[in-house]
Length: 290
Image 1 (tube, rainbow, N blue to C red):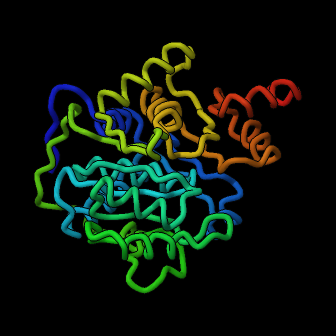
Image 2: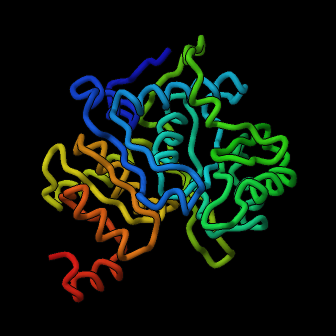
């Protein structure tokens, strides 16, 4: 059960698009996902994504994660990232985004600094066993109570979220209050003493995404191709939040393969490319964007 306040949350924005265009294409995986994670790429409508989000949210709630607790997420730029973030918000949780290149030592520090109660990882990313990294980091963090992941061949003790996605009953009795003023995201920024955790509310995220959305002149219902690594405030607001504000389709690219990126731009008829400045400038100089 979900109760909203007057200002929208990110899940509230998703719900508004769902109500208007349930059969519209919402999320598109990278075409080379099989190479990246060992899983086949998926294309989800808003209705299909909503069912997956509800199943994951119910899993998090039934796993005993309290409202407003932190869930650490280290995932590649695939549909699982968007589904997990939305599911966490639907369950009343706070997402801590962990950079993909971080290994056990950094993960352990981040988990301990945020007091995360759960961690979500992908089995393997580009040949690296991220499930094992998550399990070892969780073993050194007293706050972790739930370790889960996507993909095959997960280690013993890690709960498969692919199985959770197939659950037919996504109902839960817990009342979740969607409050846009509460913390929604924790990212990590460099400081003189290492990295520090910075929390941000739904309103912070929506305001940042809206600034980019208005400046870009992006049309409603646009197809956005995101080539940002999903671990920063800028990366999430310029792709994930922009997608929810435009009410269009989010195509995801796992950084970076120039040939695959060019293929996606052409195949998906993308209206906008979201990429780090150096990559975008290099592509413009090479004439790839024309």
